[in-house]
Image 1 (cartoon, rainbow, N blue to C red):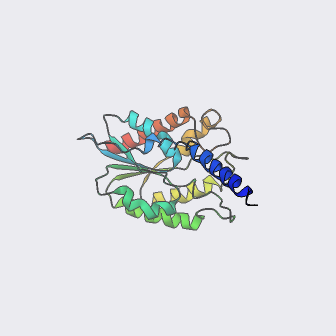
Image 2: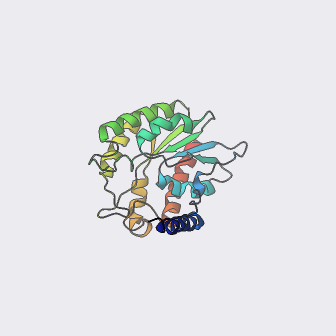
Image 3: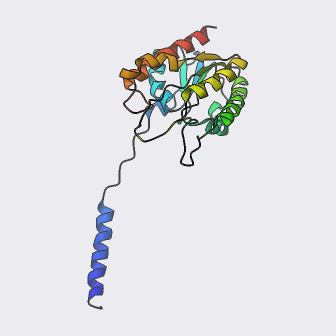
Length: 226
């Protein structure tokens, strides 16, 4: 046994050395859509609020409105409405916003391991009402974006979602009661899903994000003109 100890110690040290020499996995590069921007003096300020779908169209919207507006976005994936309620004050900050284009939905209607949706419909409506009340206090022109379609069948990564239509109808009721303009991105992108939505995924190709951006920029431009 005593003869084995030096050999085992040597083996253990060798394993530690090998582990230490393995290069650390590089961290993924930050999404460029989340980088803060510097305002161009004299231009109106626009804020985009949304999940990864909105992250996809942030940069092309910014490009389309270059020289017309300072297009900011929240510095993260907005997630479900409960995340919005917890963080909306921080996201709005203290600056003045002229237009706020916002959406929550896909994360809310996602089924969780317990078999319930992340935010069930009754809570979704309550959260939206709270968020809208906060957003209206900014004095900005508000634009609600409908939640985009989710493909049927098995998804990659595997996820199960509730009905987009149910949540969009809840949001439509809240927005109508509050006089908020609706940017119907769901209707806009639906005819293009076969070519612009990634296979078995809720996200879009670069062309799909560009296509969504055209509609978002058009609605923002319309709001700025009023």
